Length: 124
Image (cartoon, rainbow, N blue to C red; front, top):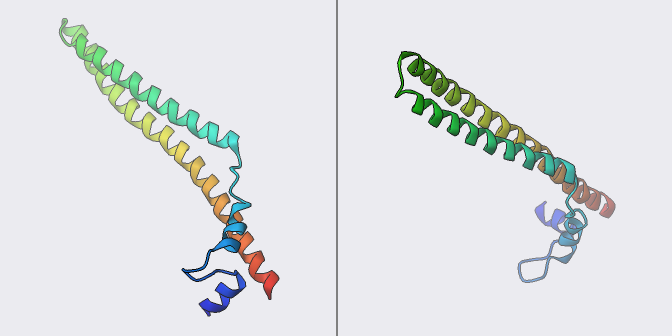
């Protein structure tokens, strides 16, 4: 059965070049959805900025611990809120970025699969 599919797709043996199967895939190699790729990169940059901001707030909160009672209470609340919001923010923005990349990869794989299936159906 696999030999029949290889014949339909014109897949050559290891010693012969695989030109026809590569020709199918090369037509769909051009990157699509550059706006989505840009948005994904923007979300990743926002995650980095949120992480840096949380780190700076954490350091500021640590510096407040040297003061009086009110300064220590403020410093403690800043430390706790920066840790929680920083971790949640970084994870959320990175997850959104990765989900966008996942959708782009799914579309590319679907396009390649359709091209290969059309090649099989045209040969029959």
